[in-house]
Length: 353
Image (cartoon, rainbow, N blue to C red):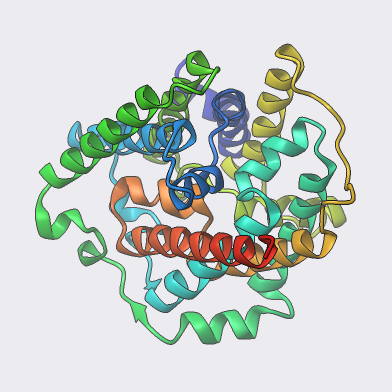
């Protein structure tokens, strides 16, 4: 049964949700095994080690770029219709939101996707942070924080169109060059890290990047055969978090099921399966050294920042970065800068004098 037949039989929403769940399952399993984490990569850079965690993240991002640009080159993906390129974007939102998200990422000990991965492995600190993150995202979209978010994003807007694609100015060769360069650096860091005892699963970061391409390719295929308007997208964790929060609180006002609706449960299930199979599942709560205020403040910063920036490290930075959206790359750079500065600051005030 082909995709058209599935849509005719079950409907667009069911097919999209099922595809999102399967791709999420794939992502969750391999993100858990590879310990894919932007926060850990930033910390390694700040500490001057630049080891396997940086290598895993760079390889995942490199594979996402190469695979997605391969789909574009083969005319299998038309990303210009996506929100990252086709819709208006905000330079001010990308910078301010990215900085805030990076700060929160350090304080909560993980970005949005990482909190979901850890929650599935029994980390109750990550679960609480994820819930606060989801509430803040919803408040920033249409609640108490929405006016502040709209004011910041409105400071510097850019129109949607080809000019939002960085490759429009350089040519497609730049995408290939950037992907190969990041992949080479990632491989170098993996091989240089002789202290890492989980080299086998480091390569699972490759499949994290593949997940991004699968999301883009799948939604593009559904959009091309559906009679309804279907957004072409890939993995993201901020809007889906708010969507599931609303669905949990009130099914009457929840949005229709789609790719995002299947994604989060799929990621959770994939991480849970990996955690149970490999003995990583363990309930963890707050201890004396865990500062509840840090986690809650960080989650609020991440939620507000993600909505301003148009997504998280995965939803904007990697998913949007793989199609070379200008605001996505600006968000990613801002997240890294915010995380690095916050880590250095917290480390300096906590260091013994």
